[in-house]
Length: 477
Image (tube, rainbow, N blue to C red; front, side, top):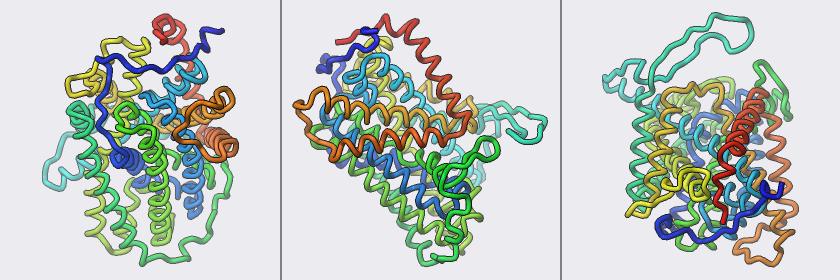
């Protein structure tokens, strides 16, 4: 039992594994905003409105508050342990090896599914754009395998189609190539695309807000404020929507994986994590208010492009086209943020012996090129071949697990090592950390039952791998 809970002493990586320190806090804020602002606000506002009505505004607020509490905990741990690996590393240093493995395994689930989901979403935008230019790609090159028919309700004959999502593979390859080129170079391009996203959302607000009508907010919570089970295990109500909208907020944890590439981690990590979280919460609330005020939620709740639909419905078709095009151009920043984070988590797990040590070697440009390439290949297979509609919300479950672990790490560290240097101290820690823990637990219970069951199955597989393979290879410092 003692070996299962052995803790890792964080030491400096050997020269061949050291990453180049090229990032400052503006790069980190841009990385966080780029990872956070993406498919969440561009598409999930419609899903959230379908489940909560105008009360989706409160759903954004609740999800944002829980994520803000988690972000404060991340900021303390990241500045205290300025090493790559995010929640996995903090858990290894504070809670023990087997818990760190579960957290790392959950992070793999989160990052892989987010990158694959966004790549597939970008593919849809790209294919539509090409069609507008008269370039029509065959379906078998633009869609992965799908299973038709009804998912629940009355039985129906399912129809299968097979193919490979080539555009999704290409965008992952481009982003991976950019990351291997250099962290500073990719950070600069990311910053420019993040600015484009912010301008796009500002344009939407500027055009939609004059059409704000209080009548569109009534009834405010037609499906209630709690989490009420509906058909197919979908949970409705304000908290049911918050459990899905939670997807729109995480991404700031990718900043903590940049600790070893930050010039002044003791200062810049806290600014990047907390700053990006606050900025995105404000952005989301303003955009959501403009959306539900400009058009009744029932008219855009089932749309895959709700913001563009709202603009078209209020007679702003040209602006809708601009918003849709800008969204497609800027979506790769989400892929960049999460692919960056996942490759760094894999890098640390390789250093710890859970993956082949050769993957932890750094290129002459100071980037983990090998592990980035391997990560890109794995995620590309997922994006190209695996149907994601049923399992995409699993990413939320993996993230909730990581957030809970980090909040617990802060509390344990405060109790066990009260005198250790903490460049950033979470204010009101005995209030903030429990809010993060209990809030994440409640959101987990608000997920669909199939998501919860799949999450435990995933971690069951992970524990089997740990006991049969990884545990013997651990090279703890």
